[in-house]
Length: 202
Figure 1 (cartoon, one colour):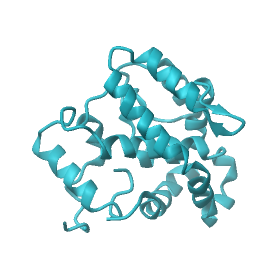
Figure 2 (spheres, rainbow, N blue to C red):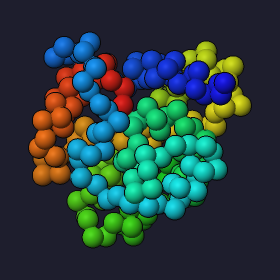
Figure 3 (cartoon, one colour):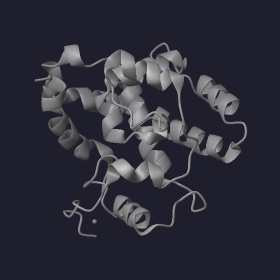
């Protein structure tokens, strides 16, 4: 059996600590479908060749052929795919000397999403927030003993840590005009803001 399949529940449990701090009845997560959160905050979607190529190269499962944005992933999914995230950031030239290159991030976002400047600004804010935490969070991520025995299944984690952080920041700070006013999405948002210890990916 693939060691990643065995490890994922442990990784996810570890990420509950990693994600932040939170309380509603935070123990009741059975009705919280965090894999659907990407439907709640409007963002550019569709086919993304870099995401598709890196997913194929590293055996990483994307939601489907029409949902290949970084924002279509959950943070837990992204952070477990260290080699996928590194591949994406390398192909986008987002990393320079093992650090996030914010100028490259801004340039890429402005070129690809010039028709949606507010989305660009939201993403830049998310990357800026996560940029400063990358070193600390990558060190915390790799301090778990499980990763010392599974190095062949993981790549340098900084890209995945940043990607997961950006996904989480984007949805936590989704502007009201982008947020779907469905009951499920409203419940997700309320839960995510009240229970950050209960669900790592929000």
